[in-house]
Amino acid sequence: MAIKALTWMIQAFDPPVYCYHEIIHNQKVVKRFEDAGVVFVDDISEVPPGEPIMLSAHGSAPEVVQVARDRGGYVVDAVCPLVTKVHHEVKTRAAKGYKIVYVGHEGHEEAVGTMAVAPEAIYRVENARGVAALPEFSEPVAVLAQTTLSHREWEGVLEHTRRRFPDLWQPSISDLCFATTNRQTALMEIAPECDAVLVIGSANSSNTQSLVDLAAEAGCRRVLRINDADDIPPDLSGTIGVTAGASAPEDLVRGVIERLAPAQGTEEVTVIDEDEYFPPPRNLRDLLAAVEAAAVVSLGSRTRDREPLSDRTIDASDLLDRLSPSPAA
Image (cartoon, rainbow, N blue to C red):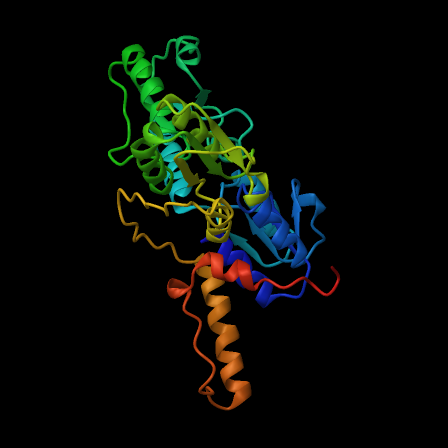
């Protein structure tokens, strides 16, 4: 959703389009957007007043969202709906007087944004030691999670938190990202059978690193994180497992498979068919509809070779393949 939303922004506005933080944690994707005229910033004050701004998929602190809107430009918040769910849970529990134990990684953009929703009520932990170091609470306690954690990270800390706070509240629906957990489940199926596992994704991607850790825990002797096919070492042999972080576009996966050129072919392991669809943010949908309507009016009628925009049927990887360098690039 975030990749497609930023692509639509590029089509709707002349460059530069500004984005607060990397839209997703994949360096190859970020570079393609930079070449197409996107400027990534780590401080909203770096955005000139009146310029279009997109907020990244990892979620932003409430004050960051407000400052972006105050800049006077067109603002699209491309936060993942699963992160929005966690933000809502933090806000709701804090309003009800809970203290919140948040399991997340220090410095990760999603964790920073979530902690800022109710900073007076939330405590971040990463492991059992962090849970043990929490103060005694007279208030009720809730537990929530960074969406990109591995199941093992989450379950281990959750168990210690339950022991520490027996009346612990937790949401009925998991906070963990289904795209992340599905990949982890599939990886656990194949990793024990592999002589090596290649995990495609960037070093700053939390869910990519979770895949690396899980493959090693599953007993694979050699686990390598790679950015793309160019990082494949020349000495691989035997059965090779290939997986990718949730932010890795499909063409990177195809490129790795082609470079490996397996003599005995490939076997694809699927644990579930994903059919979830997250539409672009509402104000961006409205903008796209207005642009489409204006185009129809200017043409007098829709021409036969012009199809209406249909975000649901368009793959994010295909949009990335079509990105063109900006005129200033």
